[in-house]
Image (cartoon, rainbow, N blue to C red; front, side, top):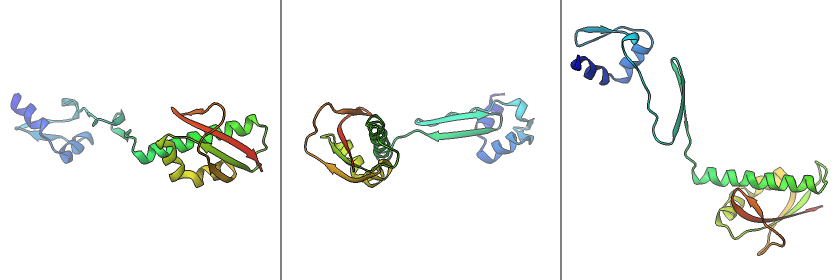
Length: 151
């Protein structure tokens, strides 16, 4: 029996696919079908898997530096949009966006996605200043001073 178990564990992807599709395989002189074995899938670290019957979907959850910058840019947009609403601006109103931060991640997000941020919040001008006034916004754990002015 150990011999059969070892051979089953050593089946390649093609043999497993055949077994999963209903084929009967000969293993150490014994015929096995899907009902005779337990097929389990163990995801790699950083991968989330959802499976049902014969379908599995894997999602890589690793956050690359590029994704982190894009996510931070999206959070900046969210904060600016909240400022627009609280200021009573109309949906089509154009603004000047002034920002300050000594956080390198925020600088990188504006550097990589500044044009996109401006387009999303309808900023005709985006200015960076050395220091902000008032209390900074917490943008996904990063301190950012943000001011908007209607144009």
